[in-house]
Image (cartoon, rainbow, N blue to C red; front, top):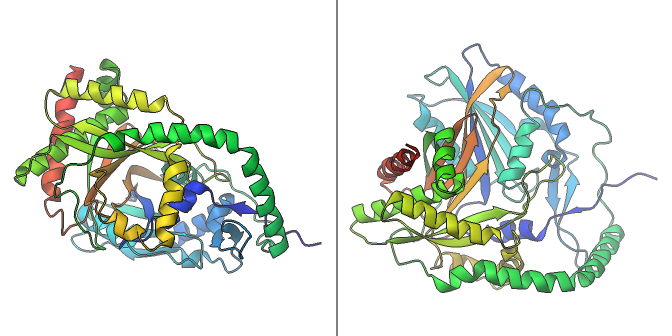
Length: 441
C-alpha cells in the first residue's frame, strides 16, 4: 500500500492570515539578508545550495490545498511539480546599486502575490551592489510561517544547518475518505475541549478589553491605502537597548514601543495634527521558538494605548507596566474571538470594508529575537538581517523589529501615497531611540 501524506491542516491562527488577505496587498512577510560577497558569490551556487537545504523544511516543498465539503480545514500536501527554479531567482541591483534600491526591490517582491498553486515562498538574490555586498530577499506568505517560524526556516538554510536526505518525496495526497475521518475526529476533540475553550473566551475578552476602552484618535495614520509599499530602516545597538530596559524594569519590546509612539506623535505634529496617545497592535506569541516541522502561526494581538509625549523614562515605565499586565493573560487567546469574527465578515464580503475603516488601532509593531551570533551563507557573512512586513487595511505605516548579532534593526513599512514623509519618520524614530539610550547613562 502506497503511503500518503500525513494530514497537516492549517490552524485557526493560519486561517486568520488567509482571511486577512482581502485588501490591496498580499499577507506576505520576509527578510533581506545582506551578504558580504567581496570574496565572490555565484548565483548558481546559491540556487544549488537552497535546492539541498529546502529538503529539511517540508513546508517549503508543500502547497496549500482546499478540502472537499465536510472534510475540514485546508491541508498542506507535497507538490509533485516542485522545482527550485520556480522559487529562487537572481538579478543585478538597479543603479545606483545602494540600500535604497535593495529595499525598493524588496517592496516590489513582497507586494507581488505568490502563486497559490505552488509552495508559498520565493527567494531573490540581488548581486552587484555598490558596496560589494549581495542581498538575498526572502518572501513567505504569512500562512506558511509567522516571524518565529520564519527564523526557524532561516536556521535551516544558512551554513552549518544539517542537511536531510531527500527520500519519499512526493507523497500522494490524502484521500477524501481519510480527510473526512480526520475532520470528524477533530470535531470530536473539539467537543472535548469545550470547557477549556470557554475559559479561553474569558481570557480573550480580557486580552481585548483595552481595545474596548480606548479607540484610536482620528489621524492621518489611518487612511485608505493602495498596493504600493516603501521601506526604511534604522539600526541601534541592542546591548544599549538592553541596558535601558534593565534599568527601568522593562524589555527590549517596551523600549521599541515607547520609541514608536514618540516618533508617530512627532510625525503627526509635523503634519499639524495632535495625538498624545498612539494605539499600537502588538503580537504576543504562544511560543518562544519553532522548528522546521512546526511552522504556521501561533500568536494573538493586544492593542496598547501608549503615550507619545512626556519624559522618556516615565513613558517607558508606563509601557512596561502595560505589557507586564498583558503577559499575565494566556498568549494568543484573542484569536479565539477575532478568528471567527473575521471569517464571518469575509464570508459576508464585509472584511475588506471593515479593515479599511477600522478605528481601533493606529499601527502595528512586532519585535522578534533573532540569532545572537553572525550567520553565513556559502561562507559569505550575513552582515545584517532586515525584517519585512507590510501594513494592511487603513494602516498607513507599521514597524517590525529584529535583533541580530548585536544590533536591533527596525524596519518601517509605509504606503508612499499616504505616508510620503517616511524619511522624516525615520529621523524621528532614530532620535527617539537616542533619547531612550541616554537613560542608560
